[in-house]
Image: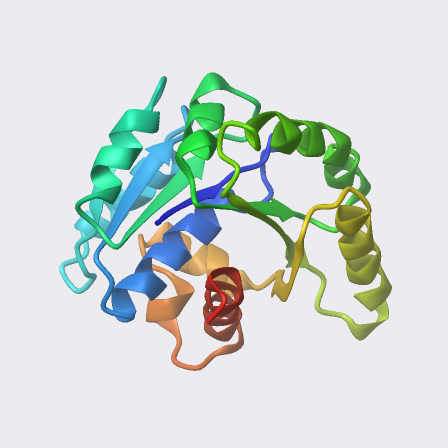
Length: 212
């Protein structure tokens, strides 16, 4: 199984999701391989921070760019799961990653400047689908405001995704400081809190994404 976190918009939380998904899968005793396919190397930097902390579990990892489809498929044969952190722009690398993926997770913040790129993402999905017809594309709302008064913004964002026929997960990833705090030390919310709100969000996302 290959899960790519992808969006042509930067800053939506792709790296954060990829990192937390990997650690959650490891906790579920899956063999997992993490790939940084982003030229900004956000996840590669996170891996370096992680390696400096002997208390954190080692993660199998590689940086890959270019025509990475065959490389990803080869890695998939050796691991239960491959998780790919794609760059925040439309690129050949992202398209090759999606062409090999079984699942593509598309994060959107409930913000107009993110959602206005929905038509472009829908076009990309239509382009890739004939090449990879079994791939499951799912949007997820990220960095959502926690105030009850902002619920409508979240619901409107979900409706916007659905209006472009993009399946949208029920799970919402809220804006919580612990995501940033964990990232700075090479850690994840899964490791920083037990049964906390952020950790439960990640677990629920994986359950829903994989249909468990």
